[in-house]
Image (tube, rainbow, N blue to C red; front, top):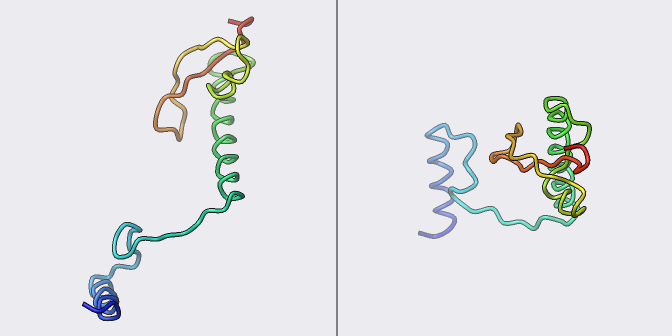
Length: 103
């Protein structure tokens, strides 16, 4: 089937079935390049979201300072693992650390 005929058939199908938004995986794959600035922005957003969830956990655990696994690995010997905790918006429990001298 020629591409123009295929596109016309797909458009007709979508119109007849009242499909207003097609999932990305169907019909035609989307290909784009994500800029480094956009990748950095997403990492910053994720880190800020994680920090906010950990900050909320400080009150629940009665601790002044908690750290993520990634942060604690940057400061060997300074933090002690408290265990894994479920943080809102994260699919898997996150390993949380406390300052070694306060455990």
